Image (cartoon, rainbow, N blue to C red):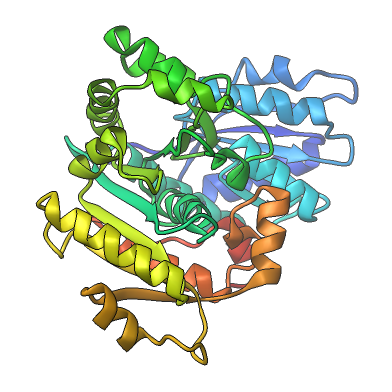
Length: 394
């Protein structure tokens, strides 16, 4: 017999609490705890009593920055409890704050029966998925830029985020661009308390607990381990330590995404050896074509089959002087994907530090990245739309 989902309610009024409780009970779920929050009462105190699989918390105009911080701490400490937020005001600031906090769903403060029922059904499905066995060895996807400024880091971070958010895959992103890595800023406004250097220094005692405390929890199912801030520190990482790190994360996650330096040194070579798929990112400009040809030749010299290498032409212009056919002839490998330029949406995503699907889920870049995630996912889960995309009508 399938276990019922258990729900905790935190509301500002008894009328709202009772209305929500009736909808929840009608759907066959159990309410294990319900609380009325007083005007001056700390959210943290109420969170101490939360039990069950789902927390429904009402966000009114009184909801402060401190509330989000306390909620984020709760989600980090109890990742098995999914949070559904009800908000009087649903604007960009609220949505971004909720996303960064780790909230799974956001609905209006007075949701209809059908809206709340549908959200609970989605959370119930995620509970089933999250309790299923994680594959013993994760798929490793690497992104390698032909030249600086190709957009490889932007594609890699957003690819990883879609894997986690829309494909439901427990994903970690390792920023291995030791000299200039800044992947953390593409999906988060802040920095991590640790990085690749710090964690490889402790590689002999690295376990699941230490790993969980070292990564930046960007969103549910998505963790990131950044490159060091100081470029000189990069020289302290050696290939054997990197291999140990990747071996460990492979057994803690379902998908591992790597952002690599374009110079194929021993560290990058170690990462390439372990990768299942390597996306080589270029533009349809002559300097990129020359470097793509060198990189593909190097990969073949290392013994990688052409099935492992996938050529992505970013900012592709059909009216450019070099078309896909010419690229394929020059580089000696088929183009896997072309991605049209979309400056305005990309600039907004980078400047605000949020994934592009939260800027414009209809963007053509998002469509290509979704296709790429589906190609790389060895065990696809039925794709679920995000709460932000559902809200704006994707």
